[in-house]
Image (cartoon, rainbow, N blue to C red; front, side, top):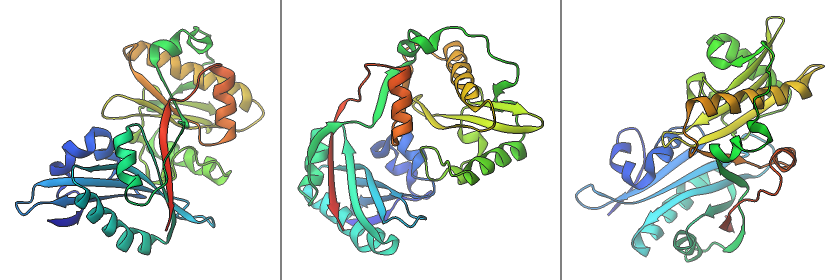
Length: 280
């Protein structure tokens, strides 16, 4: 057996273990993948992690996104490599996980993590359910709200830079490194005003077809109205383009996002998942 880092050179082989979405994510900044292969080079296990707070003054944390191993020694070997390399090199202070399957959580519990049940911070619903809510009504949207397909790459980068400068980073720490093409240009919305873009609503459509709101921000005197307009625009566009059974995953990492979803989607709660952590 040999522990290897998952890279462009061997990603195809690990694809069945990672799935379509994580196969794309593992290429991103702040993500890392560790795999184990047998003597014939056949993948036997995989571990994917995401670094959090790596460029801030806060302690760096790591989220274990996936661990796949049929044998305990495989999990031991991958986590051992993770501790000796990623934890040391990135100065990770704490590792944690959120898992849907109890078997995955138990694998990590056996490797020294705590384990408990809690509500998922992600709210998952279908496009059809969203269409039946208040957001699904066909409101008249001002002409200055459009999709980001109309933006040049330079306009897009400038808009993102201005928002980041105002201290808003959205739900993903690698926003500065994600190209315009990483988002669904047809349903992601923007506000145009005086040659500037004082509002963006960026939505990722994963390879498996899940829609994930990543960044919602507007500034200027009409920012509150424009936030609502962009959400309404994106919902209407999505209902036109995608099936009603399309999954939507809304991250609620901060209080403002949770307050917004509580207001727009009352009585909706996250699913029960397994959570655990370990000091490094």
